[in-house]
Amino acid sequence: MTSTASTAPAASDARAVTLPTASATDFPADFVWAVATSAFQIEGAHDADGKGPSIWDTFCRQPGVIADGSNGDTACEHVLRWEQDLDMIRDLGVDAYRFSVSWPRVRPTGDGDWNEAGLAFYDRLVDGLIARGIKPYLTLNHWDLPQALQDIGGWGSRATVDRFVEYAIGIARRYGDRVVSIATHNEPWVVAQLGHETGIFAPGLKDRALAAQVSHHLLVSHGLAITALRALKLKASLGIVLNLAPMYPATDSEADRAQARLEDGKLRRWYMDPLFKGHYPADVIEMLGEDAPQVEAGDMDRIRVPIDFLGVNYYSRGMISADGSFDVRKSGLELTDMDWEIYPQGLTDLLVQLHRDYPVPRLYVTENGGAFKDPVGADGQVHDADRTRYLDTHIAAVGEALRQGVPMGGYMVWSLMDNFEWASGYAKRFGIVHVDYATQRRTPKDSALAYRDFVLRQRAQRRG
Ligand code: IFM
Image (cartoon, rainbow, N blue to C red; front, side, top):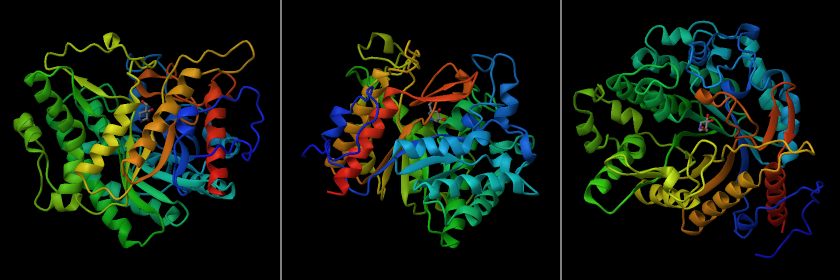
């Protein structure tokens, strides 16, 4: 590949740093470069203009569940500042923006009346993206279930499946010919496991059987929503987003290898097998025993319906020891501020594995990035060399997957800007744009400039 630095638009900022490893990779001309966020993490305006409460609004009010005692009431004030934020996305030069719709903003109780003011907000957002030449990638469920649905059983109740399908149809009718992509769920594993088994996320329940049932309902609702949306003959492509990690045994022992296989079953095969093969993995069903989900006749066919893409959220690998003795702090790898190991090779391994094991038509990395300490320098800027390196090596890992034949469609940085990191509150910063929460001032970090310049060079190469 020849260097096109001289033909790319000049980087206007002297701080600009590059993504050297990623730059050495050939990406296809139609490869999508994007940034991602989710509604609850950035929007704020938690009770404005008819929005109903979500389970996260409720959860945050329980003492001790959010590390810094914060909530999403204000977050990044994105509902107020959306125009400025869209300009910021445009200035990054990316092709696309992945965002989620807040279900209780558009249908406050998840049932009954829709909220026109909430729907109009997403009209403005989608049209504003299109006007700026940015492709909208919409996610329906990024965890903020209407509290009113939780009050009658939430994802543990089959009725929520029906409500979700209604919600999906309403959103698709409204935006389905303006957005290029609709994902049903973001990270159903998190909703099921962290929300209903460990209880560290909303709605904060601790019941393994319930968690298994929730995961099944999420999958059924995905399949039924896809089927309903297909019937609408939308322009948007349809899919789902999973959080995945390759599971490696910490040693060569039989016990570690068996445990790594089971962990892979719980995270990856539990979702991928139903979606693409129409059954749950037998080893995980056996492990669950009486806690395995109730599956109605026809459910597995409801789940296994063709999708256009799979979104993969990747942050780190899983290192598994049967006795739990593996310690990331002693692994020798650098850690992010979440204490997650930095392991770009895992992304290549994961994508290659998914392509090998399942007939996935197209894959996107829908989230990838890192939380780092990010002090603001004396010059008022954030020199986040660690995040820049993280993005560089992970984009290169995607390039390697492409070289190995994986049908990759795009890469999306998590996240556009610092935001509410769930149970960690605002203490963990994933943004490539710094947010000063006292003033709501946004400042692109060095990683944002590096990503911008990388994308600009990619675009220049497309033009030849
Ligand atoms: O912030 C989250 C996001 O909402 C879902 N995927 C993981 C990110 C980092 O923890």
